[in-house]
Length: 257
Image 1 (cartoon, rainbow, N blue to C red):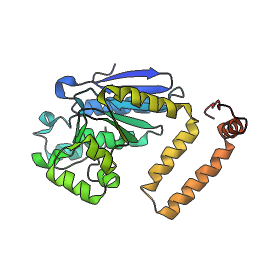
Image 2 (cartoon, one colour):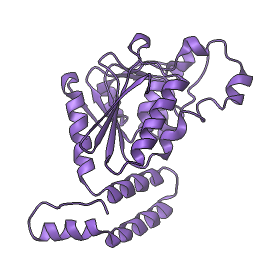
Image 3 (cartoon, rainbow, N blue to C red):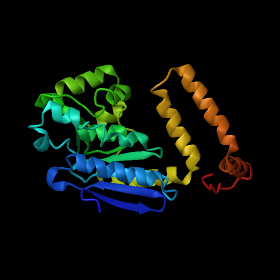
Image 4 (cartoon, rainbow, N blue to C red):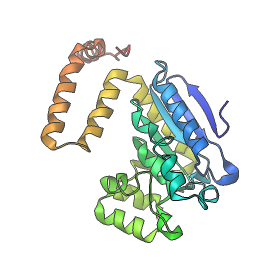
């Protein structure tokens, strides 16, 4: 049984709750491994269509576990392949993953949220990359995913000053998809995930893959990839069902094939 996360599946939506309240949900290798193990297991489960990752009202994840890291050597982190080995598996997840963030999402916590497909934030959320204030730098995508989300100038500001950013600024900057009252965060995230999970799973995965491709290819290559994926949907039963339902003015019954 996982020690640091609580797992639940509701209909076609999986919910992962980070559960280290005594450490403000600080991330360590064991927690990262449990998160990735759960995500990859749900990725293989045809009964799951979308996942929500959340924490508690005080913290999504208030960073990495600095107490554990303080005396590590270069030889250890390099030899252990720190982060890459246990944390980066989230990049292999093909189904959508939503971060539902309340309270602090700092350092590795902010980076974990950015590694998800999009972020729904409570109005209490605080984001930041404060690594520079403790003599190091982001290592889980903070200098790479952040500028892709908010642009170079904002990323430089946040990473070089280490300042915290509230939910309103995070949304205005493009880091966050939407902001909701804290009391409504979990309901909003689960309803959004349920809506996604009700659509054709092959198409949902194609959309995720195509959007991610936009960040790692030229526009010409991205458009060619999108076009091939669009064409391929015409081989799906769900495409036939969806378009016939539209013509017949009824709700489609997708079978995820």
